[in-house]
Image (cartoon, rainbow, N blue to C red; front, side):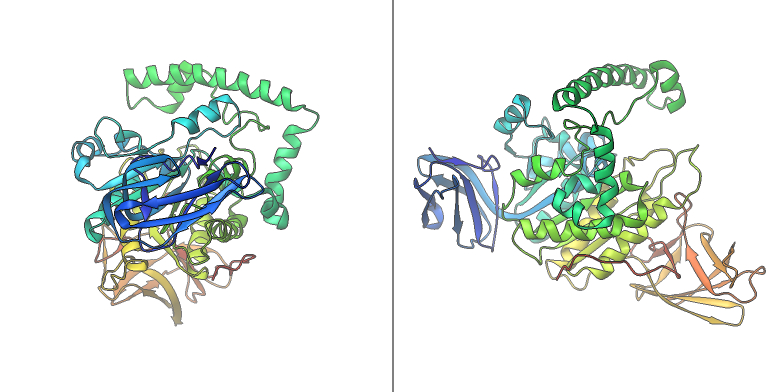
Length: 508
């Protein structure tokens, strides 16, 4: 019997204007006929010897009210439009109902022309995994059910639907707390030294344990943490602003993320196999990707792994030029976290990947961070800036300025170091008192600098640095964001002495 991949359901949204892959499993040699009657389109094939089948439909224009038939199976209310995969970790997963003004968005969502498919966040192949995939469906916007959609992805999709005049579909493929290593196959992690520490962490955790022992260990942890989260929720119901240290005092130690073993969702390559691969090679327009927080322990290799991820995902979705739009991390710190520059280096890696890998974009959201909160609740700027990037990069709206100022170069004249910015033709402005700039001399010791705007440049001086040699801006995990473009998008952080990204994957 012919089975379609689980992502093919009623209300599905198929990519317009590109050959469309329809695929699934069956018995070797069994005939497969796929048709869209409203488009007078029928294509036939047969199940391959390995039990898989695939039919490629010709490109079709945007529209709604179609059916897709696969042999005797019929899917109703099929639409054609723009499809984006929303990948990453918790800030991409962050739900619309929990976002600032999320309730108002939900009340109006029925007219958004957005559809959503959430890849099940079950990462171990057991009965629960099978049940979750059997229940997975494309969803229409509804105030009662759409609150669990990704806030950032929904808001980006809503703007794209409005500006492009076509339906937009989001495939949510994200998992809170995930490392970049979770979204790459083992072969890629083995192929470069940047991936080896993640594999070694897993090997060390699994050493001497059977699969059954690791499963039992993780099941015990899940039971413990489910009870702990229940106690935490009761605390927040009592006081939504209860400090974290008071939560810990009342609820006890928060053991997180649990033992790293065969059932841990955070094992290397786990989400790649159990989530991403289940929707490959569904035809899409591109990727939105918001991730990196959980790689702060290894910021200096993040750029290499991110570059490998872009290449791998493009290869899996069979288009080496698929647009890939990153979200650069915002400001963040906890009260007891020392200033170690880890998030600065992650942001730098993300910017270097954007500047090095073709067909990419980057949404700078430096101003969206919240002190002591790794999950900023205002996702409107994130969604809007993702949409701006897509509109300029993909949809040809060249007149848009989708960026704030980005460091281009610098010159030194006497005691003044002048920084030149790209994407500053519309002008720059301060939001609040100028701060965040520092300069250093040959000794490499940085001092706060006086900053003066002059066209598309900022002139920097500091009494302690008579002969400046380097500069940096907002090179901190968390700080005030004051330099913006006239379009309201903040300047990206930078340091002038940054080293080139050691790329190991070619993305044309």
